[in-house]
Image (cartoon, rainbow, N blue to C red):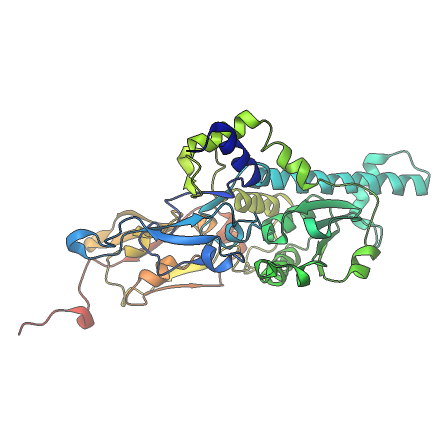
Length: 409
């Protein structure tokens, strides 16, 4: 059995990548056939699914035992692809790469370059009013405008400007990009110069689509910022600045403060490379980035209320009353509580509530409906999303539809 020092060394060399919020995980909720996103996204084959019961059944029900994702800590490179890929936010990053830590890093970097640009502007204009320069920062022209660069460790050497160094760019999602723009960055650069030769380049295959979705959000809100994905060193050099950024060493220093903390944590987890329960360790709330994204968009001012929001923010859910059997399985299996039972309606109907702000568009509700009665599409309006008031969906009294009715022999 390894001693405490061995456990500490293992924890330092292979820190746990994420904690699992079991109530959010579709596989853990008995729907492993609907979602293997973390397994599919991992470029190092570090994620696997294991059945809790070797027999694989729930006794007389004959249903598969819920599976749970497991992470091989020694194979994991902390690329973050599993965390970003999870459609329900079930995987929560830990410590120095937690949502709060990354959001803080983005905020500090954006504010630093805005302040520097304001000082440069006032110096060139002979003005001493720095605050006025900060307020007019949105009028700065590019190049020279405040810019933030996201870069991976392999490509970090020699990168200037406000740089946020990550183990891999797969950690990035729309919320981080929009957050940088909302905090004043007029140019957000995703430096993917090293990705083409990286052994885990599979992890960032969604990065172009992530950047495009963030641009759609920024365009609708008319944010004064540009999001660019570059994969050539010459492009990166042309955008370099002078202000230093936060390195991974700085990020990880808080997570690995002492060998005693590492040993204690490792002993508590019994040195297992398992994605733990959210309740077993200090973990941020799910959807931390999502709520920050909605806060940012609300703070900068809402566009026309009738405008349709990009589906990445939230879809519209609707139910065909004639095709619905009234089983309410869609609400039962919703992992985020976006779709839930509210109350009984007249005539034995059931009233469901759909809270768009909580919806991650994971598709569980659509997939579990055997009649195809529930549809999610991109038609939700700005007013509906930011009303933060659930809409009501009425489903019929529980019934067996003709195509499912068991006929007598």
